[in-house]
Image 1 (tube, rainbow, N blue to C red):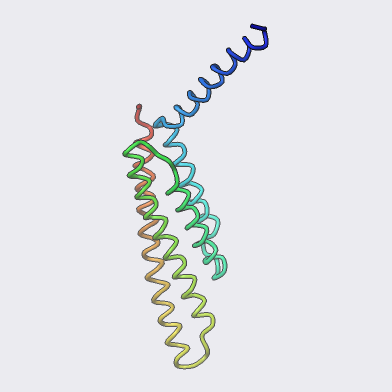
Image 2: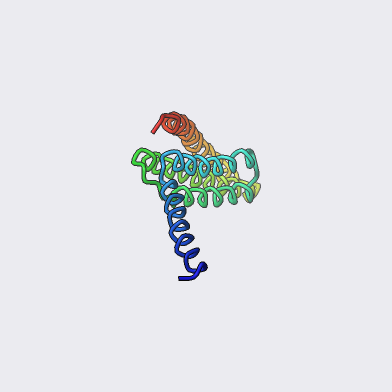
Length: 159
């Protein structure tokens, strides 16, 4: 056996062991918490950046929130409690996305309304839709805050 073969006999098992160790660590509670919190924070930052924006931006925000929802949904979490938080965050972000989309579309309808009796009715209907959508989004945002507090509390507990 040559020296080169002995190196490979040592390097390969060490490399495999390190890989397994790193993959195994990915399923620790701390690691899963970190991934969930990071992904949720990315979605929340979309809301902060786009507060009070107009129609096109609102519709884009709704689409971006749907993408954030999908990212949260795709997290491969093993911890049962974190999986529950994940499911609840998916519902919250879906609600936010749908209601911001409704508000954006209603705002667009109001902007396109003609100066007439039927136009005024469109504006009133749109205003009502916007108010309802924003109230539902506000409730979802409060749920998100409560969930975030619960996740932080859970994740700060020792394993």
